[in-house]
Length: 164
Image 1 (cartoon, rainbow, N blue to C red):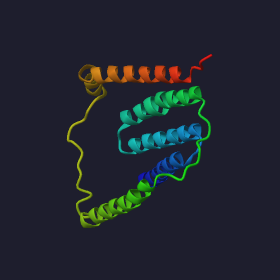
Image 2: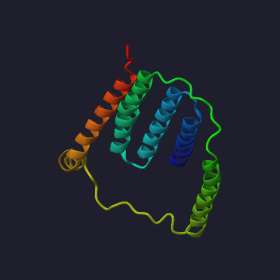
Image 3: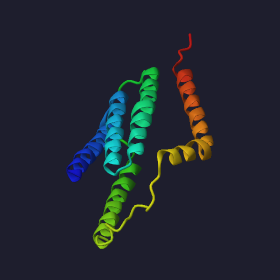
Image 4: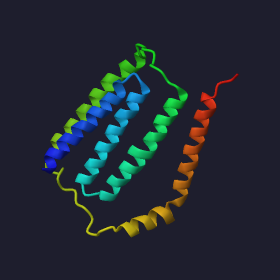
């Protein structure tokens, strides 16, 4: 059952990521990113990370994507102009992607007997331990991130404001 769910939501995640890249309208890309984030939450749930799955849905699929969609609508972004792209991207990108695929294939085929040897820790992390670390030790990065998001929203409002 886990394998079937993994294949379904892994495929949905990859399809959403490809759709994100191929869309011409920014709102459709943002909706595809919501599909990717929700699929990742289900994959986290399959791994037994319930807190991480809930945080993925609440923070990324919920709050961050609402902000992205709000900023996209505020900027009134229409369809993108179709360009032919950079020749340097084609010259470097395709061979680079092929080399990366070859290296990963070699690693997976060479190390196939060692791929299943990862082990989980022998201890259980409770929600109170996790919240203690998040809200005591990592409080400053959370606050800095919230200020950065606020500055980004204010910048989008300033850019979208029409001069009379």
